[in-house]
Each structure stands twice: as C-alpha cells, then as structure tokens.
Image: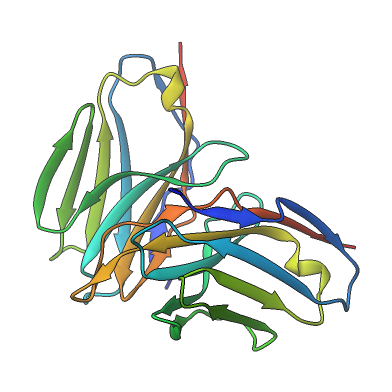
Length: 108
Length: 115
C-alpha cells in the first residue's frame, strides 16, 4: 500500500466549474496535510495546509480533512485555465511524503 | 536573501561518476529535505536534515548521502551514478518546531541526466 494515494487523472473540468481532488494516506500518526500545485517544468508550490479535521477555506480553495477516514481533499471553485497543473497531496509525520499527483486541466 | 536556491540547474554525468548538488535554505528555516522526482511521478523522499543531523530517510541506497551545514545550507551527494538516477532533484526547506512542519518551500530543482 502506498503511503499517499491520489487518482492520477487526468481530471478535466470546464472553466467556472468546481474541481474536486482526493487523497488518502496510510500513516494514522500523520499530523499535517498539504496541497501543492506543480506547473509543468516547475517545482511544487504550497497552496493549502490543514492540521485539524474539517474544512479550511482560502479564496477559491477549500481543503477538507477527515483523520478517521484518512482522507484529504481539495476543492477548487470557479476553476480557471490558469489552475491547469498537477496537484500534489502531501502528508507529514516527521517528514513529508507525497502522492503521485493528479493532473488537472481546466478547459476554456 | 529569501527563498530556496539550488545549484546547478542542469547537470549531465556519466554512469559511475559522482555528483554533488547544493541547496541554500530559506532564511529562518532549520530543516532541509531532499526529493527525487522522475518524469510524471510525485517527489520521492530521499532524506531530511534537522540541525545538521539526518532526521529521516526514504527508500534510497547508501550511495545517496547528504550534509547540512551550520548555516542550514545542504548538499546531496550521489556516488556510482546509474541511468535510473536521471531525475529532477528538489531541495525543500522548512521550519520544524514542536515536531510540526509548517509547509515546505521548494527550490527550482536540479535536472540531472546520467548517460
């Protein structure tokens, strides 16, 4: 079983729609959870962090965490073509482990 | 200076050679982690250094080694290079306090090609 699992996609949504990205993790001791965005040929950049069960909103992004289900998700509202990228879920328990990423394409 | 800087940006080496990659941490950060990212894959954890000591290691052989210096800069050394070592190598710095990491800041990476 992989430590952090994501649907590899690709996920395609029309401009203005909600994109939903999901992630599960195996280490119940994990303390911190992150979403990174990675454009092609670039390094990952942090877009959201979440530490407690529930929802956390930041602009058009909402991260959701359910530790009992070992599940993390990211919702992107009003998706824009500039959101087209690979989204990496990362889970931290002393060190950070990443999923393989979900490639999102937002079509104009 | 803010941000994480890595050098070199690109490197071509021959199988069997050794390579050293360098990273300067973001100001105020005390932890550095190194990752290997193959094309189309997520970053794979190599190891982490906290206050100059190795603080965790992923599933990489001993020919991958590292150092962290008092100014929190770091090196990744790879001996006996293999073709499969060709990848993007990412350095990330963070602030570790009370066992919690407050998100990683990545450098722009070093693209290593082994021929």
